[in-house]
Image (cartoon, rainbow, N blue to C red):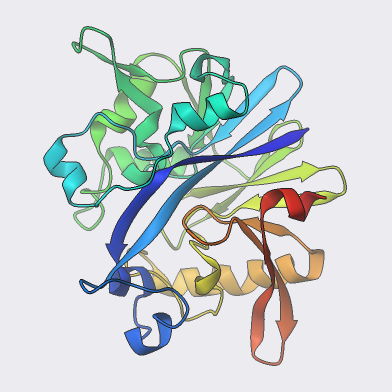
Length: 281
């Protein structure tokens, strides 16, 4: 099994929204912002290469929305989904499986594209099965007023309409060496993949832990629908991660691909920040 970092570009989001009730004077020391209070965040995906299987976890924001939509998020960086796949020797047609941790637009926008005639929306990975949790699918296709701006039907419905959708209802191993854990604080049924790579476990943290700066328990995003549940989930999982030496793969941390954590007198804290290649060596 080989793991490849797939960078798809960056976006800017309000620092206050990303750090919730934590004051700017505290979070800005850990994660800088510009004069408009905007922080730059990566949309870092992960490719698991295992024999004939090429499993992509999340797929960035895509390119099919309007210029006005994208202007709200100040997209930046030179990376793209197709370009990063090509850099490790693959095309989008080589992908056999796509795991969508959840269906917010910055995680699944790249799952669907326009056909060449620009008349129909089709799966961007024509040979892939798409995986997400049933709980998240039902939540996203019947969205609440708080989250509905993040659930765009054009990112979601074509997957089902084209017969590519596979829903997971329970925590389980969905593919050899790849299991799914479900979390409910950020959004309903966020599916967090855990990958066994030799004697190490890599956890794709998605929005359970957007960055290394979010490791202290109170650092919870305002986007989370149930922040108190996020607190409980983080406390349990981060202790488990420290005890088991998990490698935490960070989707949104523009400065750090991965980190490990340790138990301290102040609770779970960063042990080491490092690139994925170094973490697996």
